[in-house]
Image 1 (cartoon, rainbow, N blue to C red):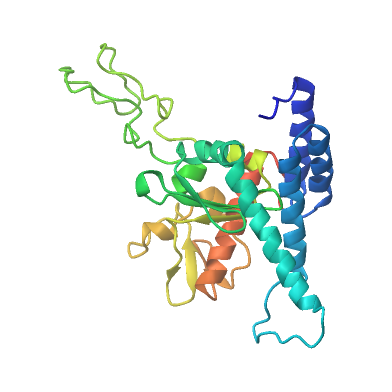
Image 2 (image 1 turned 135 degrees about the vertical axis):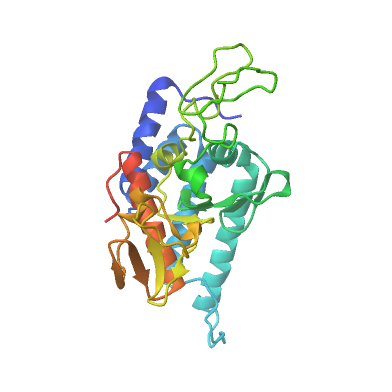
Length: 304
């Protein structure tokens, strides 16, 4: 078992993490961190970063993948075949490292997001979380850290509390007081009625974006319970605070106001909606806006 880092070493590690989150597109801080990990007896974590960085660089150069029109060797040894074999070995190593170290690298993130540890490790860093067999989201590790997250809006940014229903308290069935409604912030003082501990009596959960983005250089977010709506002018997201509301627009097309205002790249729209030429373009725009908002929550600047 790897020894726990000393207080000073833990501060150094936090500094490396911060530098990586500040510059998610730069491999240099990651590779420097990998060297540091070797010095502090964490060779597998260092190898995981280096191997995933190499895979990413191969993919960026189009190396290591079978061409769409197939491949025929005209020389021996064949450079293309060597790269394909090399990438396959690297991916296998990533899978093995992640499986062997899941308790240390995967489970803490899942606990942060979903308070659950039921997961499946897929290929090349993809992790699916399905507590009790119910799909709740995915993580994608790339270049040694979580780079992409798929989850619902409430998990990432908070929402109405599922325990108290957003009324900021929990009423016990045996309470007989006629004024014990637990609404408008009124909490009955009888011993049977209590404030809601799930939301700290605010009526809303806080969401986990701040903690997650402070620890991982995430560059893509998929909010699985939001979908753009086609209004005839394009695939659109709508301002959730618009007045008057559009009655025919589903709630799933209303991102939070703080995310909506960061949407960019729209081809059409007014102040109350923003339209895109395709569903994929609208989804990508929402991902960029969500990442920008979450980075702000974590005290990080927008991506360049």
